[in-house]
Image (cartoon, rainbow, N blue to C red):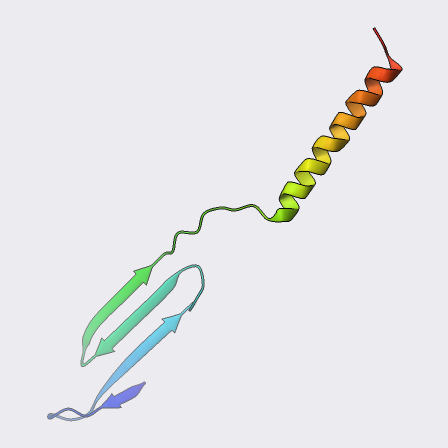
Length: 76
């Protein structure tokens, strides 16, 4: 909390920053009993991690290997 000098006396004001740089940003400014707020939710597209692609490809590889192996054991 900070003090501002005013002709009628000192007033207090607050600047709050919660979750700075996080998923949801909230800014509140209160000066001389006048309130203002800004709330923003940034858009972040869902992007899979590189490990997800690696696990997916490894799983497909294992499935293809098993299918190929099964076809060799039981020829029609």
